[in-house]
Image (cartoon, rainbow, N blue to C red):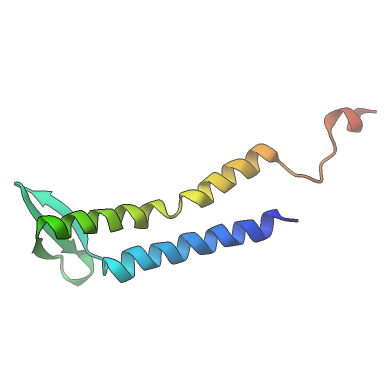
Length: 97
């Protein structure tokens, strides 16, 4: 069955992509804007806050979006699987005869 290996590939991609973009590149900092100034906060160590330049904010925002969109292929695959159904099922017409 092809569905299982494809599912595992997408799940592995979602996990490792999240780990790469959020944990490695962002180092778990979350960018935000307050009063026109750029900041990043880190929840894990007592809500530390640091200021950012506009370029750092732009890059961190892109990394943040990439980290949280990495799980989308898994949900698309689940939707396709739900629409396709069980490939071993017989069609309804064949089951009624």
